[in-house]
Length: 274
Figure (cartoon, rainbow, N blue to C red):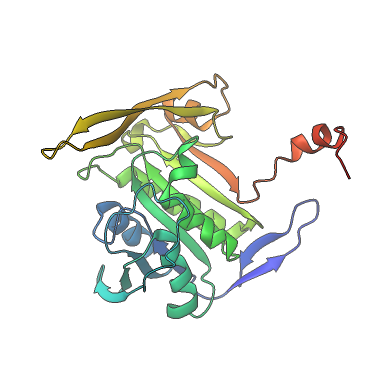
């Protein structure tokens, strides 16, 4: 079980108890049958006891949604050999909540989400079900990581992603993470021999410039498809977008504390009515 440990000069850090094979919760947003999930299960099984709880259907773009107006269902499924697996009728966040409260009855030593089919760099972290599942793990006090491959194809190769997922997960199990923090890891769509290494980055300032494709159905009713372009406004060489464009795996520490601390001084100068 995750334990709290103080380290001199550092924030409180979550680490695991030594001596036992770690319990690793694996989840995702692409669904229980996604190749990225199977790849992550395979590689995590080499370093720990894996339990899988994942949505029974794709849940991409769900963000941190939870199910509150319909019952949740869990069905036991075979994921990979002797790995304990469940498919859940809810969202990625529901999967983590149920895993901790109804399946494991404890906090696992690590929560990993993915491997997502497609990038979750920059602003995409807000919309991502993959990252929200990992964020829920961090809220629960579990060292958590979201993994994404910059390739949307279901036929994508996850060999390089597996290599870096194992390396990063092993290091986090050994060293822990600061409390209230998780990792957003994105892997470029390159063979392992072409990837230069891992960069600890900040989130790039980028956004989607969205459009809606308006159409009309056979009954004359209008409907819309969301389209748009991803625009990176950030030219810094310390961002996740720069790292991915230059052949590096990007690892961005993320917090679920949305407080804009840098704005407090500005706001405190304003005279507010009593």
